[in-house]
Image 1 (cartoon, rainbow over the protein chains, first blue to last red):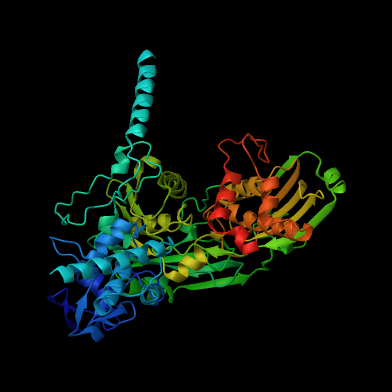
Image 2: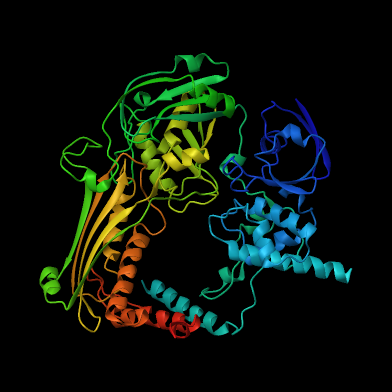
Length: 159
Length: 468
């Protein structure tokens, strides 16, 4: 079946079998391998992408359900000139160890900061509750999100 | 020779200069925030790498940038033209004899290109300590996660469907699950023979029984720890490609590629010179990716099909067929003087090994040596046994047995402190290692900062205030 959607601002489409998940379509048909397959049952969050302003486990969403949707993946976070503040701060704080949870973690954090520019630690923990990090780097991750939020706010204030 | 000495001198001088030139307050060595992403990607040289010693300096990971951009290539992010996907059928019961395997129905399915069973593997055994583990079980499956057949198909979904068409006839065998039961003479034998104990270790120092008899107090308690799966976020994954010159290349999430190549050469019965192993970025290892798993299967499926073959474990595969941390049963008997000085410690460790040995040799060694704890004890006896059971194979996991015994000896230190009315910190300071202490195996220890570390930690987190 033909699925047409917008990914990172570009119209994309693919002809996929009906059982194809959004994750499979992104990775295999569209060549966007940033979102990862960790558990395939929605527990680990490595497949997190943003669909119409909501962070979702793309392993649980059928590609067909995303037809017509606006999807943002990790590949859409930076442009060729600059990193997203979250990427910058994750790198700076050492919040990425093996890196496998990174793309999902970053997308959940982005979705949080888009809606809540000054989250409390509790709100950050809540927003990242669906993203597991087995290197146990949570402290650094939370610090990086706080720092990125501050950087984004001060950039906005000075603009 | 003279040049060599000069080099060493120069190095030492440079080291001192470097140390002196270190500014007292270190700037965080991170990427400047105003630095744009530049392509081609030029990674910033971490300042910590340019200076020695680097201890105490903040360093950023060289691969952090690509991780954050989502551009790091893990195995599952790599594809090749005409690549096939493999899936593995696993045994249904904890212990069974395979009477027959019929893959013909699976092979008839459109899109299924090749199948493989244990009987087709040139040398069907591997392992880092003993070679007791089959690549695909045949004729005996010893735990629920043993692979019995594999399929390579044009899609992952087709390969999964094809597994359902494979007919395996089993004869159930008696199984054993508790390691203490497994040590009994009449227990079913996981690997035949007359015992399930497959490795043991004894550490003896002084006369433990005499010292126990002379102790003012003797404490005894049994401690048990559970099995733990590593759950790396990236499941085990590999790709094999057999080329026209009879060589095979493997891209794998394996952490120990040199050892892996040795195991591959053995299982494939071919020289190591014909095997190329490429270790890629690994999405979490924690000890669970230190030996081969499905690599020989993929190599042979690639040989049969003439196409590259990829396989990624499902999360279920990961739990049942990759290794886990050894559960320990630990009996601690400790003799103590009135003032809380440990005089003797007698320890019996039983390691639940699961179906195959894997890294048990290392685990039992480290676990035994560390079992008495970081304490000066003149009389020590450690007896450790690793036992086969019909359960998931245990192997390496962060610390090789050290966390298990740490749980036991530190729990018992608290028991002793409580019973004798001594502050738990104080009892550790009275018994703890100091400079030139002897380890249980009589190694002289240097750079021992145990007591300083404990005191500093206690000060920082307010131990005294908490006690008050």
